[in-house]
Length: 298
Image (cartoon, rainbow, N blue to C red):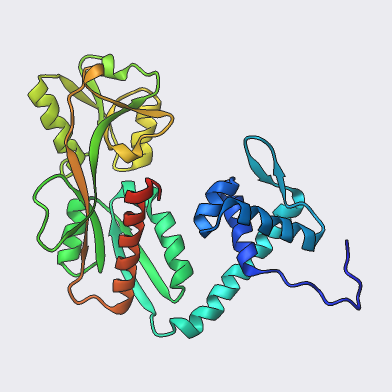
């Protein structure tokens, strides 16, 4: 419905648009309510108000899911642009002095699974700070950090945590296998691991040695995507953090004839002479992992 030319055009509320985007991204009114710190009933009222203003339905709802209508698909682009423009304008006044470049190092597993979420949220709150990311093995990242090539680095370690590092996360390592797969039954045990320097590799091989289980390295990849491919194809099993286990990859253990594995730590080192942008990025990373420890989600 078009508004009459002599009638003032209604204004879209940015809080309502944030809720609308949150529902579109999570596919759930309940999950969106948690994301925007409102009750589900308040979220429903916001969307009802939005649909009344536009005179169109923006979501199709059924018992299992919430999806965008054609009009909702049109609105989502405008909503994201309006929110981004508001964020850019406000940042010019609230945080005009925090700008610069942050050189961040991360292992591949967290670079693929966690950093996109971290960097997206950081860019929303600190649009004047650029983050340059280096993905490498933990040992190489620590060397880069020591040489002054990085401002912040994340790295995995099972023991001997450096004095200058802070632990962000501690969790068990488990054997990952394909759901319904049989790779763990083969002799020798086919493994998917990376070369020397990988904390999970050392823990897995030590555990197999103590258990007297013969193994062969069937698949080598420095990237998480390659590890997942080997597992999902049932070519091998691999040591993984427990939080990496999902619907298609299951945790295996003594019941499947595999030894228990230890915990590992994800740690962070920040340059001692950190600038304001580096400190802001480090604080954001800390907050992300604190939230994960509380909710189990990044």
